[in-house]
Image (cartoon, rainbow, N blue to C red; front, top):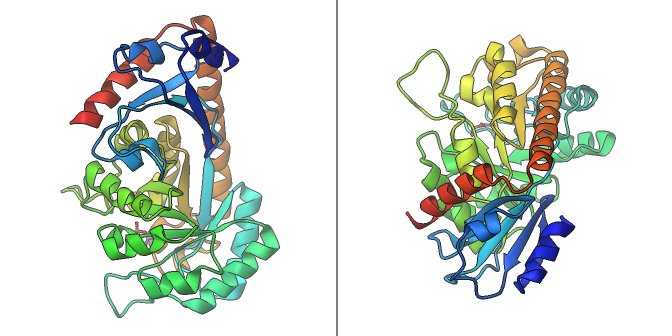
Length: 352
Ligand code: PEP
Ligand code: MN
């Protein structure tokens, strides 16, 4: 990495270093309009070059204080990732359940705990969650396990209620288009996990994220949870191709939710493996110690034991990819084929 700094200094190019989400970004502050983009994409250690002036200036730079319409250039440096594993039940059913599950998913390797307190149900007659009581149980589970807690909010009032109890506010598929709610979470200092609406394009998802950033909150995590297609063998269709696209167009961590995407417990393991292989930063998996009897989404829930096997798989995949990428760059540090391609793709999308 010192190499990049040295080269930029030698070229008398000034930059500002930004460390966020374990990602190092160099914001080029010198006037570089006349230099070809590959001047930067060819630098050893550069993963991606993002040209500013895009339609989504905050999303593409990942910063709330990004210059809105400048010619700024951002260099994103390569990083090693260890997948995030968010696990827990669809709904918090009672205190005993969430405390026991929190312990079990932690043992299985989960890094965060999920659990629905306010459940958006297609039928109003279905179980709609325990509300604030569930948030208290989640907080208790966090105290016992140290796992940060993710839970969904569907209204401004629920955001208010959830703030003291949760670490990550989840915006579900049905609310991605609820711009007033996005503005409300944008005014908090919590991480916001924004799930893709079941019929949203990638561009609509990113524009929804832009609403959150515009209010001052740049702690956004995107989540692919499947989209509606004509296919009926799965609950939704998991659009994994959106993962590398989102990574190119934005600076946010991308999580894949194979549970809601497939609706089938037998598909959670293969699709989790695929998610990490295509570049996702983590997965969110509905886990229950008695999956068949889960109050909501029973068909897709897996046991903590199954989760454990998945965690082993995805950690090995991530490690293999990390090792391979570092070997490749060592072999030929200036081989820019890969980064150059990404850079071209990214600039095309940016200005489209
Ligand atoms: C959930 O994660 O609990 C959930 C309801 O997911 P989605 O909004 O993607 O359906
Ligand atoms: Mn669910």
